[in-house]
Each structure stands twice: as C-alpha cells, then as structure tokens.
Length: 266
Length: 215
Image (cartoon, rainbow over all chains, first blue to last red; front, side):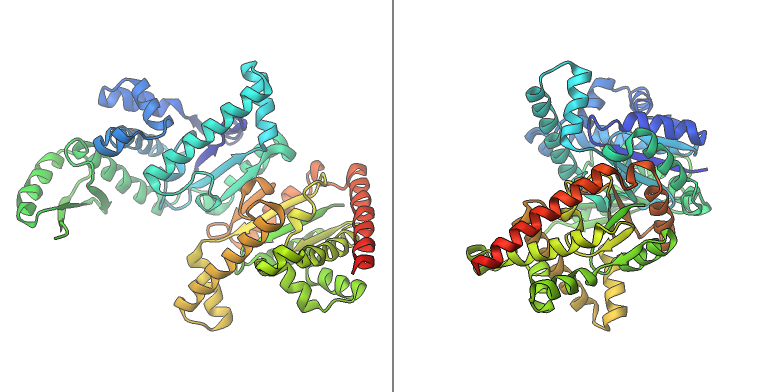
C-alpha cells in the first residue's frame, strides 16, 4: 500500500519504468488520467491544461494567473486520485503536489544527454543535432516552469527521495530497485499519510473555488479547518471571511473556515 | 567484485553509510588512506593535499596550477587503490576520478539542510546559526572546487548512478538499497573496467613523472 511519484527528464524512459513498477507492485499507473479528470471536473479543454503544465510561463501568466488556475484544478484532480492509494504517478509536478505528505516515495529518473539524444533520434526520427536542440529546449522550459511556480529547479536532487540514473542499470534494473524501495516500511501508506492527503484535498478544493478571484490567496487545511491567508486591506477582513465561509460551506470535510488578512505594506 | 564511490554532502552521514556498506559487501572502505598514500609517494604534507582537494581555488591556484598538480597526485594514489578491486571509497572527487571508468557504482548521499544542521550541532557542539553558516561555506567551496577543476557542480545528479536523500530513507535502509545496487551485474568489475583503470594509471604516472621533473 503506497504512493509513488516519478518525475522524469524527457526522453529518459521514465514512463516505461513507471508502468513496470506499477505492474510489479499491483498499483495503478496514472498520468494523463489526472488531466482528463481535471478537464471534465472544471470544464476546461485538456489542451489548455496540458499547456499550463508544459509550457514555460509567459509575461501574461505573471499578470493574469491563468496558469495558476489550471494548476490548481490539476492539483485537485491529482489529490482525488491519490485518495485511492496504491498509485504510481508519472509526469509533471507530482513531487510538488505531494510535498509534506509523509511516506510518499518521490523518485526522479535521469539519463545522460547522449543517452536521451539516442532515444529522441530513434523515437522521433530526427538528426542528432535536432534531437539535442529538442532536449535542451524542453529542459529549459521545464526549469522556467518550476522556478516560476515553486522557486526551485525540477532537477534539484533535494526534491526527491531517490534519483536514479538509468544509463548503467537500464530500465529493468531501475524497476527492480524502485520496487524494492517501495516495499520498505517507510513507504507504506500510514494513518498520517491518509490524514494529510485528506486535508490537502480539502485545501486544493477550497483553492480551486476561489482561485478565479483570489489567485494570490494561500490556502491550507488542518483537521478539516481551512486556513486562508490573503494580502488585502484589513477593513475587508470580515467581508472576505463571510464570503469564503459561504463559498466553501458545501465542500466535503470542511469543518470551519478561518480567514487571515495580511495588511498591504504601507 | 566491484568499485563504489560515495560522494557525500558534509554532515549527511555518508561516512557511516560507506563503512556499513563496505562491511556488508566485504569490501575495503577507504578515504583518508588515499591522501596518506599520495603524501608518502610524492613527499607532500598531507595537509597541503587536503587543502588542494578541499578548498576552493584561490587566484594564485588559477595562475600557477599548483592545486591541479596535487589533485593529480591524489588521483594517482586513488587509482592505485581501486586497482586492488572490492573498494568503497568515500570522500572528495571519487566520482570525478572514475568518470570514464565503466561499471563503477557512483553514489551521492544528500540530506536536507535542517538535518545537516542538527548533525553538525551535535557533532561539533556549535550554535544553529554557526552551523548554518559553516555548511553554507562548505557547500560554496565544494561547488567552486569542482567547477574549477571539472567544470561541473558536484551536486549535479548526472554524475551519479543513484542519489539517496537520507531524511526519509535512514542510514540502514540506504545501506540495503546500495547493497542491492552493488550486486547487480552492471556494477561488477569487468575486463573493460580493469583495462581503463590500468590505462588511466599509466597516464597518471606519466603525468606525475613529468611534473616532478619540471618542478
């Protein structure tokens, strides 16, 4: 019983590894399913969500927060999936979405540039030079994306429990090693994991309901009590508090909504 | 039969992992031994070698290449050690020295800054503030050192076969995971490995012969 997220450098065969680990452990392997669910739940085209996850932020994103909104939707869908347990998620942002959730195994798969170039050449039927360009561009977009949203590069090893380089051990070696790690006691879903997952989902649902008007709000949840902090004028605290309580009253699991206004700097 | 290098963030409990892994595999665990050998073979004080492999390069180093010569001596001593096979090396530069050698298991052990601060405070009996400052300084030195000599940051994951974060994975689990890795066919000493080590060692001996004649 456990949850694994696999972040993969593009063309590092991480998808194949995720599927095989899931088969090995009898877990469900999910990736695009999350986007499909978010697309259906929030009535947003899947393409728009894919772009929000894949493209580097534009200047407009910094002003309009469009990307933040879509990512909030995806986060909610992701956390709903995780409630089922026994999941291997591969794709973008899994390690960010599971931050602070104990007992989740966060993995990154990497490969040397030369190895990845070979994979691109074979898979996309392009020249070596073109393959190099494709990879460098993808890596840069990824870096910008994660710096914009989380202030840290996706490649930073601190984000993961394990980083595996597959040049030497190859796909099957990586699958065996990861399956063995996933079976360790620490990476079994615990009561604490479930509790945290539940609270995270409530917070994600709450944020997805207010993100349109309050993209800068910070939303957390502890034991069903939702905490919203927002930078605004102190005079509107009461009004906002009432508004949020009303907006979130039907969200499953919410016991109370607390609003904290952080006064604008004068 | 194999060779393992363990690069460790300072105060990340990498030494303990290296020693336990070596015991479990029946390999020799080495670190300072390499410096002692280089010191003896080339008649250079150990502290000077230690500075060469530890401190960030000064402007003087950049002009005189003094650090590079000392690192070459250490590298030669290192290659001689690993030629014996069945070795776990922990310490500086192992992953750089073995970069072109196939079938060597290259490991990095990292820990969150808060974890390292705690270890440092306990071990050296210093305040949290001092521990944080010291770790920052050590990390910057390390980065400068590897950028100067090899043009790549020690923290880059591409340098390693596996990076283990020991906050969630404890020391004993890390040892078991590495034991599992080390026994895989691709990390067994091969003819290609032996040949490469020999070639590198021959080249290193040539280099140190020439540089000692020059000086």
